Image 1: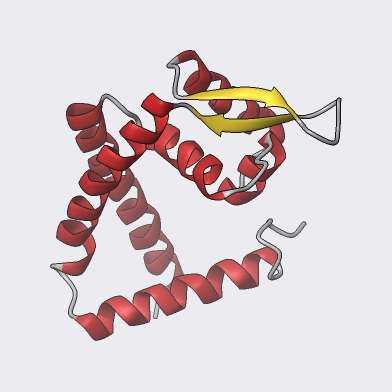
Image 2: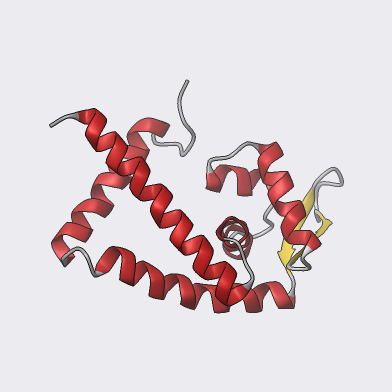
Length: 148
């Protein structure tokens, strides 16, 4: 198997998938996919800080801070003083942030079913998920961040 073809297919599919999801979320929820990713990390991470957003999304702290700034400007999250560290802030979704995440989650689930689950049978989808998980672990050294 030609690894360059595999790489090209993987990257092109990721771009097509991202763009399709991003467009649908913007149309139905006025929410870009990147903002939803940030908000989902905040939602599921107790005492979430920008550093946790960066680690979860495999981006730099500077990039995560800018992404959080955009979400905050839309009124979907706030920064509160960290209860035990005065130099740090904790991120928290606002009521409107929680509402948009809930609405967007339904859109995301529907679109993922259409774009991932419908074209593949259950075994293919399971194999894809397993392979992608193994590749991420190998590239990141198991710690979630790229080596090197």
